Image (cartoon, rainbow, N blue to C red; front, side, top):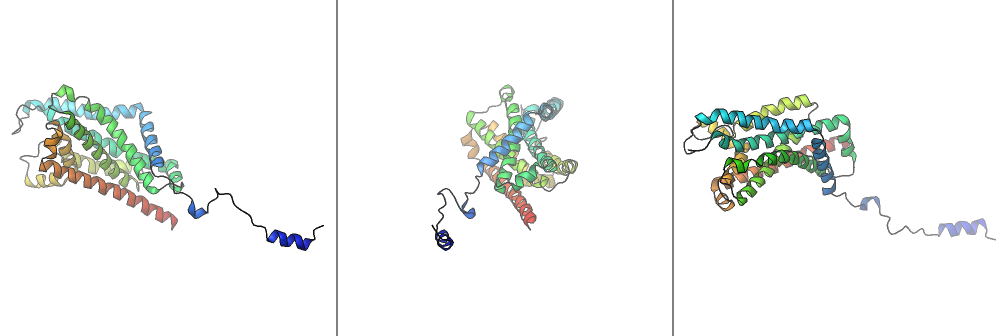
Amino acid sequence: MTSPKTAAVALESTTVTLPDTALPAGDLPAPRLLGPAFALARREFTRFIRQPHRVIGSLGQPLLFWIFLGAGFTPSFRPPGMEGMTYMEYFYPGVLMMMILFASIFSTITVIEDRDQGFLQGVLVAPVPRLAIVLGKVAGGSSIALFQSFLLLLAVPFLGLPVTLSGIALVVMAMVLSAFGYTALGFAIAWRMKSTSGFHAIMMIFLMPLWLLSGALFPTAGVPGWLSTAMALNPVAHALTIVRAPFYADAATALASPAYLTSLAVVVGWVALCLWWCASRVSRRDKGVQG
């Protein structure tokens, strides 16, 4: 019979071996980035599709602008160097830009709604990278804007534009870049907003001047000097340039144009800056919660 002293010694000398699957807390694999980002983006797009009135309203406003303004201004539209072009043809890229701009920006209202409903707080405490939140919300809002603008892109064959397949590819690329830039801008502003009404008021201050000074409504040639400078500094004007040019030139011709390459570089830099701003704001908020 084993004595209590012998049992105690045997217990102390016993080595407990952990299974091979057990890992220290510090060695747990980091959560993946693309999985959570894709889930958030899919949620944004699914919520949009399930609201038919939102889909109709987003498509209806730009179409009404295009039809009424196009029909009204066509008889008096005679800009130099654009002989034979109707105002509906000239205004078409501007309507595309309007749809992308407004749909991208206002899709980020869900950031405020998700915070009010508690969903955003749940995402923030989840073990996912903060960059996944940025990429998911921005990609979701961009997909909403691109879905609507691609529907309007179906009108190209009926306008008689001399567009080529390579030109269409450049147009799509420009639309994707623009959507990401606008959505990232809206996300960065909405992140600290407390109400949707305040977001609407702030964004209208930015939206209308950005769009009006892009050359969407009127050509940039012949405008006053101060207005020409403002339009040259406007990233939306450069985004409209890389959307409009491929309708009248193939990819090789467009990419050989210094003006096109300059506008493309401005848009790419602007998109990168907006994404960095988003990541910076989300990171600062996270540090504030921990501190």
